[in-house]
Image 1 (tube, one colour):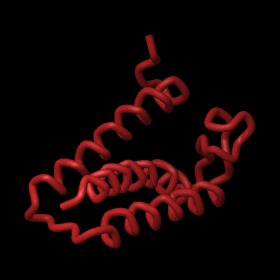
Image 2 (cartoon, helix red, strand yellow):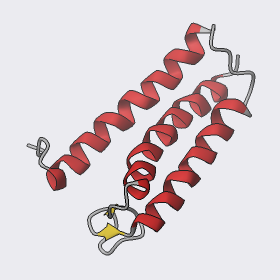
Image 3 (tube, rainbow, N blue to C red):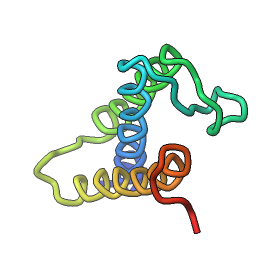
Image 4 (cartoon, rainbow, N blue to C red):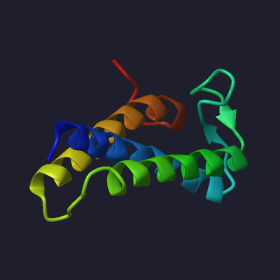
Length: 107
């Protein structure tokens, strides 16, 4: 497998992880930070904007994981690349959104 496929799986995992808080907040009818708020990433966007942003992230994640190369759930290398993308984006999100929602604040 080419290294570009692993890179696509890494970013696919990141996009799929980023989809979760936006899509779920939107479904719950709650405003949430998004790149379209003012200031970007800090202000709140409407639930509708978050559903759309979350869905966009799902589509990009799907394309990167399912349409690039031949992703195989039995391939440890592919799963590790995807999992590291999920973990890295999860940690970044926890740090970034934690300061707004009562989580750990950056040092």
